[in-house]
Image (cartoon, rainbow, N blue to C red; front, side):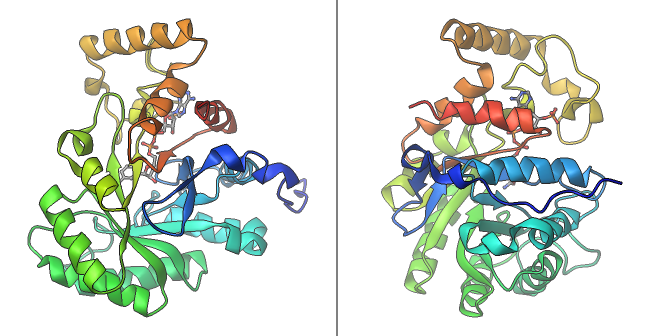
Length: 319
Ligand SMILES: NC(=O)c1ccc[n+]([C@@H]2O[C@H](COP(=O)([O-])OP(=O)(O)OC[C@H]3O[C@@H](n4cnc5c(N)ncnc54)[C@H](OP(=O)(O)O)[C@@H]3O)[C@@H](O)[C@H]2O)c1
């Protein structure tokens, strides 16, 4: 087997920095307009070498923010193990140039303490995440979802204590409804751990956080906003315009099922694709640019199953 050369990051990685970074709310943190998510394609069942190529390409082009969660894989935890291996193999020397996030809130381990928003779960989960990645701290720790059964103050105090313990530098919340976001904003501010960022699904065909006033609230209150699944898991690309490719996420039938691709949606996607082509862009570029033009957006959090996809998607930074 041929050994890979040691990874040396490209000297040119910050050449585009004037157009690549945005301030995250009213914080001191700059995030790249395009960030990379590890939900799919970075698990224990995926090719490590491909994950490594994608991550190298990302960092070489100024993508400093990698987003994880405790249960990304499959199997659960394995995307964080991949991150740990990447750090070991290539990235530890660049640790201070990286902004690594992880989350807890969904199903992770069996029994009553491996899910939702209790202090018990969050405290154990952050320790597990740090162990899997071989890190002393993450840059950002999220409550991955709103838990209607747990008092918000319990979840929020756990976030505060995680920061106080030095296990995370900043905290965020994902998929919390507007009223709960307001409570979180006040609670965390009152405890001197201001909410850095909200993670929600905003894309051209699915934008509840805009419709419900969440993006506006974040913008008005100095909270950053990062949009997950900005390409609607690949729907907002040319991937499904002429059938379902065998190697696509939809063909795997997990988080993106074929029933989502209704004839009406397909017609709409084809229309968007024609409009993009007429402007000399791809549908994916236009879809990402549309999000980045919404007031209050800090970053689009893309996924990629190849270097080529990421390369093409970075072209959205045409202002
Ligand atoms: N907070 C939450 O609850 C939550 C939920 C979901 C996601 N997230 C975060 O958001 C990140 C991104 O989510 P996502 O993967 O759904 O994002 P996405 O960018 O909407 O979809 C990525 C997928 O689209 C396809 N694709 C991307 N670029 C393409 C291109 N140029 N041409 C053709 N196909 C292209 C690829 O699928 P193929 O495999 O078909 O090639 C790729 O894996 C996740 O990794 C995670 O970090 C968070």
